[in-house]
Image 1 (cartoon, one colour):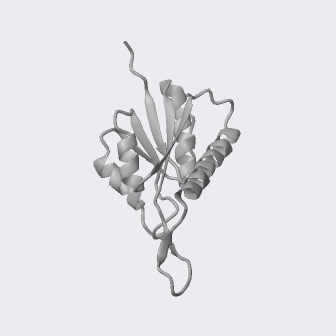
Image 2 (cartoon, helix red, strand yellow):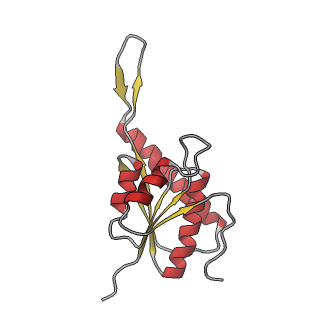
Image 3 (cartoon, one colour):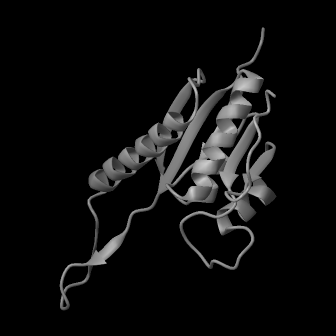
Amino acid sequence: METERRIVVGIEGSGGAKSALRWALREAEFRHAAIEVVTAYSATRVPIAPDVNYVPFDLGDIRDEVTRLQADVVAEVLAELDDSAVEIRYTVVEGRPADSLISAATGADMLVVGSRGGGGFRGLLLGSVSQQIAHHATCPVVIVRPDLIQPDPTE
C-alpha cells in the first residue's frame, strides 16, 4: 500500500510565499505529490473610539478575507505555470503561523516557505517563521529565497 505524498506550503501573500509555492508546485509534479496550501491568521483587536477599550475584529470577516487572499495567490501563481496537474488543497487556520505550519506539516513529505514574509525587519536573512520551522518541524524544510531564479527540477 503506497502512502500519499504531501507537500505543505505556507503562504501569506508576500513575494517570498509566491516563490515558495512556485517551487513547491514544480517539486510536487516531480514527486507526484499533492500540495496543501496553509495560511494562518490571528484574531486582531482594534480600538473603536478613544474612550472605549479594544474590541476584536469579526473573525468571520478575517477568515473570509484570508481565504480570499489565499485563493488569489494560488490563482496568480498557477496562471504563470503551464498546466500544473498537481492536486491543491486549501487550509486556513487561526493561530500563530509557525505553530500552525509545523502542525499542518505533521506526516508531510516536506514543508516549504519563503525566506521572508510580510513582516519584520528587512535586514534579517530569515524571517521569524522560517527560522522557527527550520528548528522545530518534524519533516524536511525548504526555505525559498524569492530573488533566486528557480530551475525546473524535471529538466
